[in-house]
Length: 463
Image 1 (cartoon, rainbow, N blue to C red):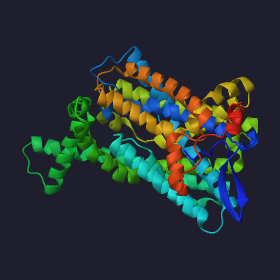
Image 2 (image 1 turned 90 degrees about the vertical axis):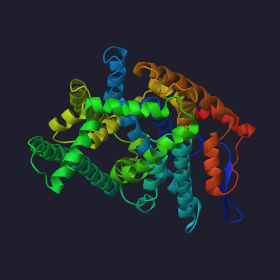
Image 3 (image 1 turned 180 degrees about the vertical axis):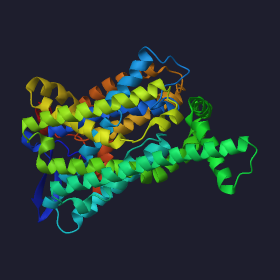
């Protein structure tokens, strides 16, 4: 989300650096970053809308009350096979790259502690926007809050070499993989101990205090993990959200959001985010993300990354589908959780493919269509929450659509944001939320409307 506006340069006045909006030469813009960011931003909606439009259990799984074949199956399979986790990974990589780009600019323009002051003020305001997105716009899956938490730690690493940053990414990947497999082992232990206690209980044998606790955990696990239990929990969520008032929905999501922004961040989001932030910082320092590396390297990473990622996905989805999304059966068969490893491979593969495509003029022209969306990524991300909240909560479409029908709404939002972003940036230097965020960061109102000479360069910057 760290986007450098299209027409910003710094000039010296009275020994102080001031911000001014005038045209810059095209080479000063990293348009490729905006293009990939725009694609990732639109792609994120493919996943997010699955939790915003129906009970969250159906994000990974299919609704067993709906057809599991035909359009619903293809909507689920395509989302999980090609997109789940990868668009967020791309977005996180670009945030890391954008953080380095911003800090480099600030340290050239400012002296002393001012770069840190501006950077941390920017991140803290991002945290506030994340809380608003989660609690006010009612999106429990908000990423701005965990981005801000992780972003608070990036500043000390800004001068690390790309080698050290990649080692840091591997360190966080190791922790994330360890944590997700620790969770898997705990679930397996719950199943094993619970079944022993259940067997003893069925034989009318006296259970110890520990065995009673094991039996209670096992029963609770079964209730929420079997296909039948998942559907019961989904029905409960449906009753608490569908057709309810804003205040009722807020009360329901409040505790869920607090758990996700505390335990969820510690247990998953923080480590997940730091992996890709560090990768993005490293790839910016090498020039890889701007297309400056050897083409053969991009080809190799694209082939290996996408190939390995999709292969891993295939076996995971096969187990999910044939077990009818029964988590209990899936856990019993699963011996190693490679979610984060798969995401790293597949995300880097997609990133390399997009950079390769950008090197060819026909693809470049198509990808440039997404640059305005990427330049207004902050606005468009929040706008997606606003639009979907109005549709699914305001107009009470929550839980009423088939899985494939939800993607008609995705397509409509994509078209709207592509058109809106392109038109908006013809007249304004920033998206509306970017302008608010930037004004809060610099503690003064920033130039908003483009001067006449900027409009002349508007289309040039995207060609």
